[in-house]
Amino acid sequence: MARNATAASGSKQPKARAPEVHVARAPSPQSLLHAVDNGPAVWVDPSPYISGGRDPGWGPHLDSFLSRNREALAAIGTEPLIVAGRNGIRLELRPGHSAGAVPLRSPVSGQVAGGLVVSPRFGWPGVGRVLAATGWGSAPQFLTQPLVPGSGREVPPWVLAGPALQRLSNLLTQLKPGYQERIEVRSHPRGQIQWQTYITNQIAAGRWHNLPCKFSELGTDSRLRQTIRWTLERIRLDLVATGGSDPMALSLASFAMNLLDQVADVPSRRPHSGELEHHLGIGPLSSAVLREGLRAISWILENRGLGGGRSSDGLAWILPLESLWERYVEKVARSEAALSGGRVKVGRLGETTVPLPWDHRSHRAIGHLIPDIIVEDSNGIEIIDAKYKSHFADLDMAGWNAFTEEAKLGLRADVHQILAYAAVCGDVPSVKATLVYPVSEGLYDELSLRSQHLVSAAIPVGTRLKQLRLRALPFSGLK
Image (cartoon, rainbow, N blue to C red; front, side, top):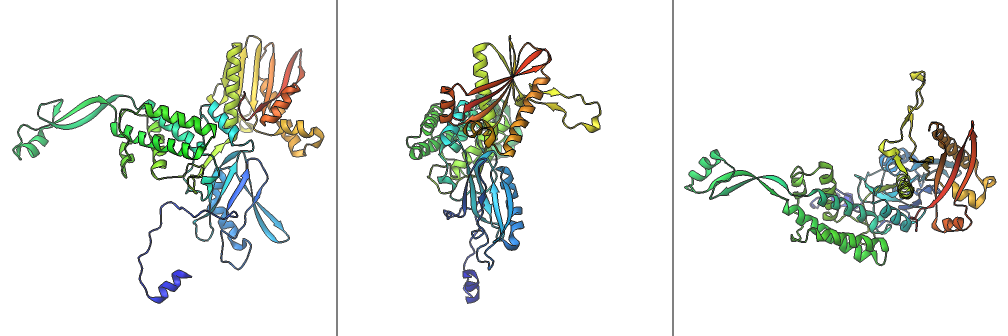
């Protein structure tokens, strides 16, 4: 209305240039939705997205809202549910296995009008300890989406600072001395003299003694290391300022200080606009390491929110908790195998693939089985499948009779899957088929006191016995 009134009055005002990234004011509680991974669906109030309409509901805008936000919702693993009720159409979002934050756009303007934040159901401290235990192997992934208004205050600072520091650490590791090509005007020749340049520029100006030379020199990119130092100082300052007594924030601040020691020989320097793009392709760096490192620097340079309350807006990101859980179970399996002399094979590395020789290719449903983890030792093998589900906790809390039919079907499917893996392991003296489920730290302590954190059943297969095991691990790291 204000824009139309201005136009009608005939006054001329310079048209403001729309920012490339939408930075909104801190949203109302209704426009920033909060959910928990694998938790109940959350209701989406249409008013922040289609304000000004006569119809208080979604009306004709529902399809447009889903279309504009389909990519963001799919990235965070959230399923939109359309529920028809007495008061009309109701839109709900059901979270999946990922934590994170994504922006939500208005179906009318296409601009960011709110956001969705999905928190981990086992809490941020537990996630932090598991991320640290796995070496940030399944760190948060950043999305090419606008900032999420208000989300910067919803997550601890280390959630996004951790992967940024890891990328800078990888960049410093790769940033070793290498031969770089240089062109320099010298009074004494070195390498190859650029004769054409010498004739055109130097002789014509009477500078006979100035020789343009092209040569290779061993060294590192000092300007890039200066930029890395500036970035590390900014991240450490944010962690100290917003982390308080958070042990993970303090740990990452110490990590940042250790990285700063590696660039103590150069001064800190904020990069100029466009300078980061210049570094691409320079030096003996792998393109992936350089690209990810420069992207982390750009987050800090553009003052993107890394969480913890310093900025109201935050980056769009996701953390696949299912993958993180698999990495953590792998870490536990490797630690235990190291004590027993076992050998560990991992599905994500292609080490456990078992082809299925179907007799008719046209009827082939799946081509192979891929157990998460296989541990081999002198006594036999253990097949381990990490399941980011609540089955173990639900069984202990409510028992089988209180299970929903959907939960029973899910647990049966897990058992059938692990037994299928065990069936193709060959003729070995002992086979353990283990399903590993996450539980809270408190429940794990209770189960351990009752010796119920690991339960098993012997299944006769021919003349041998195979052991089906259900195991609980705390989603917070073992003490």
